[in-house]
Image 1 (tube, rainbow, N blue to C red):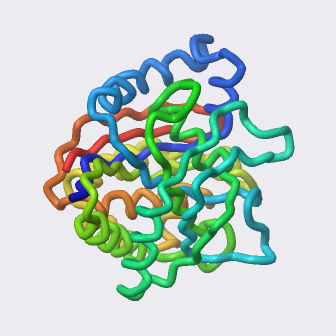
Image 2 (image 1 turned 90 degrees about the vertical axis):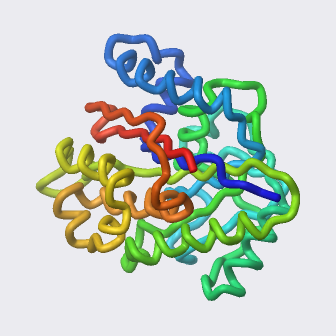
Length: 278
């Protein structure tokens, strides 16, 4: 029987991937961030999930404005790094888990979440950077990957409540899966940042840190967040935080916080990380 062993919330800043790829993790600018990631890497190494559901958003790599699904689940046997305009990251392709992914898709659709099913999909930094943050630079990722892509690029994005409820249904789907499988779920994106307009460069550390605390102490309150509040307090790209709520919804209400870390700046973004154990 499958079991959700942990949920991870993490930023997926592309510059973090570039720092790893170019050997800059111990440079003065980046060292405090990567030192803060090390306890999370140690923990995941000790707990070794068999498969990770990575919740992220595509950045016009696999999809364009010609096609904008709200929720996309990848069911392919392999997901290659996407070319984001400067060539694919030199990281391993992700091995999929088609049996588990199709089980998730069937369960979610029959329980009224209208998932788009992707039989082929490249994964960009939204997915590969969290894998690098948690697993370092292996020759191959140490677990199988099920990518779950969320539209937070083009209005209207799904609400915080809808994302949280999707997480609850993912939990039910995992518990209904027969094979003995240790499952982790990553919710990625954010934290506060804005890339354009008069507030370009905004980072709201107080808001980010309160969000991290509430993931443990009051997750039910977070699902009431509106798009307007998220963008007002965390910047236009702060809307990505709804993807963390898919992870949180998948965990038990009394999930135990194993580790939490926050650092600014990481490029022009507040970078947070949390591990919750079921």
